[in-house]
Image (cartoon, rainbow over all chains, first blue to last red; front, side, top):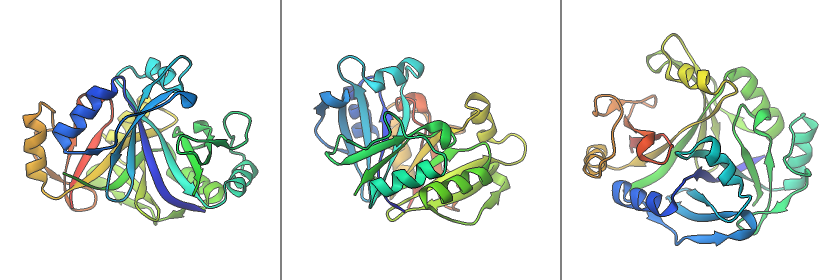
Length: 134
Length: 134
């Protein structure tokens, strides 16, 4: 059922500082920053040969990343996003196996404009999983 | 300088339970479990189309994963591993930019039999980065 790893998301307290560090110390290729007010994040992608890493800074009030940074002020690994071919089928399989979908349980439109859902990390050994319809 | 994302590593308190969950609820394709006593871990890979996710359970005494699970008993995202073409050059660039290499600062042979090093997460916004020579 799992397809590609679409991205790994890292929460950072200072996006500009993180970009400078990734660029200068790792020679990373970075996308331009993008504000996504509907998702409460400002985003830069580290573009890799086979996937990408998403650097997330809180934007506005009520950002889920702000809450994460309250618990992890230095930043840290936030979630991992897998592609699936059929998100509704993936949701039904997860629920059938007792995993809990965050929010109201229905897919939403994610930051990339595609349907996504998030699975309760308590049901996957502490890792927050995002599923995105490919 | 950064090449492919080789893997994302997740620490889990119970590898068999995690495998069962990934298989049944996500339809994940998993490698057979492998004990790596020199690294203090038992490992299963979630094989994806473009990369892989490493599920890590502590093995033996003094496992770095056991220490991580003491702080995060449910498990969680542990590190991210990038390939680089020239690990010594990558190390020199990191050190030149003020980032700290864990341990004695010299590459070691990692779990996949290739030279690796780990960078202090305090120098990368809380994320533990492994670099592996491709």
